[in-house]
Length: 496
Image (cartoon, rainbow, N blue to C red):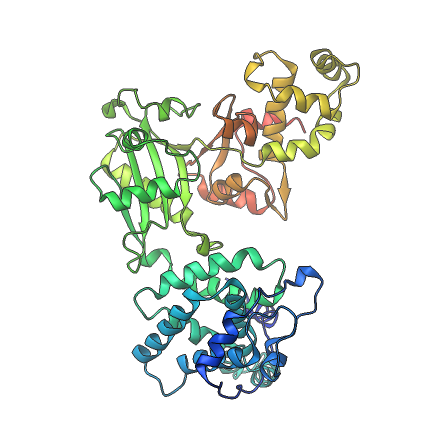
């Protein structure tokens, strides 16, 4: 839990000033004609100094490449204000929001951005009310009035924007609309900081609406509706599903696939995991994806290998429920197969190749003179450097077990997973996910993924993360201290 001062500081950073409501817009037909003549809005990154919606609402003419004319912008603001009008009931507010969503569906990208800007700048918290509440809270610190002052401060920070977004969630497709809107918004945040407040509000609301307490874990099988099975093909993000035969193999009797579902999106998995039930931790993805292989003997299965976890909703970025998914799946599998004792992943290392491209020279410098000389002979140079090492690594699958290049690649991968950190978190996104959930780096697998994608990401290397159910809390504690939990074998490869 965050302390109240931390919450105040975080909330203040999102505060935006607002102006009085704009005047009612003019003729709707004229507004729409102006919209059709609109051009895409300029990006802050273009070097322009775009006007805020405050200035545009009181203007007469468009400037430069502004998408909506001032008149059309005023009309849109009025429509948004009517969604959250105090006298409007929840169902009526949802109906009005649905009408705005219908306009949005036909709008051009620049026009949509104008709506986002209105949401950010015209529906922010009341700065005057907030300042008054903040002063009252500071004056009440340490007194009997502190609790009530905190309540007032929290209420002062609740913006009209929150209520507006809640009204959009009322109509049947409203939640889908908001998810898609955020997915469209996310790529623009770096170039237009004005949109950050809307994104933060959406992420906060989604964190509540998509809390794991409201999600349902469902098994997906070959008998599931075709429309649902097609979603697996569409959203699979780790190992592309090549055919219906490939999909059927992943849903065979020795496999399990589970997804989290939200009651407002019953036919849309939010995240799903594919599991192989085997007798040992897998070291290669090829046997698991082999369509011709016979199903494993479930009576001998002692290990559940999570070989693919895919998020399906870009709009839910930052809303984490992967941890809960794995825990729920472990509980479900244990109930069905009491013999299961080991829970591990077979995971890609998507950031390794790019990282090595920047740090190969530094990794070579860590070698002692003897190993540096051996590497030089293998590369055909007297003084090994990054370029020839990276060139030789492109033929990773041709390297034998004793190759100095292969040995260094494995050590570099172990170092990347076990030592490379950014802001106290593992650099690799998949490592960050599993280690954050309490797993540890267990084993590196040479040629674990010999596909073109695997070679492009990590020279074919894959990694097993082990979920030791008795040590999950300990592993999380280590990670919080900036120490990546790794097996003895991985630790020895790091060569600190």
